[in-house]
Length: 108
Image (cartoon, rainbow, N blue to C red; front, side, top):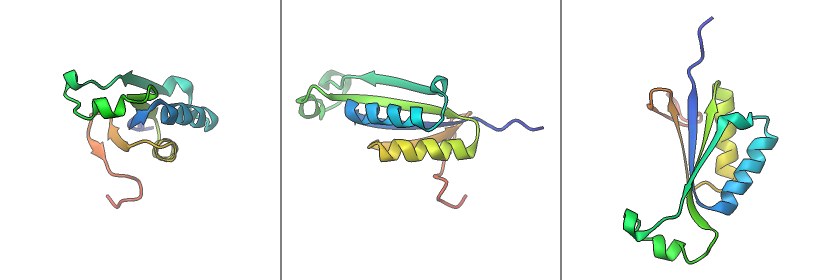
């Protein structure tokens, strides 16, 4: 039996509120916790983010990436929907080689 290629669904958030919502919803969706990864960093003008001062005015603001490793296209689509509905500013999917994938709603 052929192995299904892993799909990584990656979402960018500018607020921790959206991240917390996404993590709660992902946990309730049946996606294994070990498949979800979070990387956050405080935006600063020093790292080239000119909008950092404006976004940093609220202490809840933080640039964060949430990544979900999916073994099936259905799980990837489920993760994409949860992340979008949780307020992600952007959601992308890439295959295990880093090749961008179109949304499931787009013809391939």
